[in-house]
Length: 258
Image 1 (cartoon, one colour):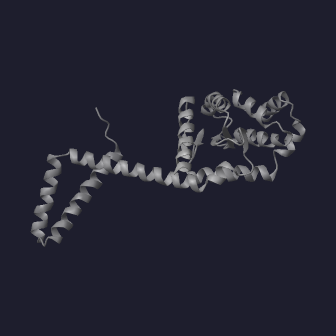
Image 2: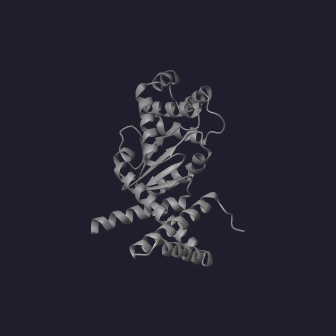
Image 3: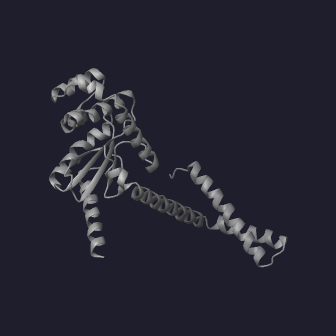
């Protein structure tokens, strides 16, 4: 049995109202009297009741138009934000810095889906060999997420970003400051220096910039991937990553050829 939603009911009411209004305008344009308009409206109503599939078709067209408009708006926003996404000057770039396709990931160190995607992501980047991976800390799951993001961003100053990032993406359980320091020690980070560096205004401002960018692009959860200028929210398997990379390369080739 098909579930009837409030949105569906409201859409149906709206379409009925719009069709009725359209019918009345047509009637007036044809010089109908008010009595004629009433009769015309009744005929429109009767027709819709006898052919309810028309309403469904109209809703499907409306939904398709909404989705297309949303996709167009998203593409425009991503294009306008390309420099902030791919070359912001503070997000760590892994993989091949000179790669021909860029993957941008918004992630949180306490996000289970991010951790689940991590092996596929890194394997895909490593096996391809020609992909830039821009890592954007997007701590949205509480205070521990913020602490972890600040710590890993600060570890860049000690040249330890990648090993520290890997350890925290594989970590299970909470990320208190004590645990963060334990993981930092494992990869050879000076924790005393880390404690000072992670509280810098620069890191705080950069995290805020990432929040603002995500808000502009309508990104509200993690992980969120942007591959070749195309947004893919949520955890995605390696196969889809590879397909999106191939599509991005194909578009580049086509643009150069044309």
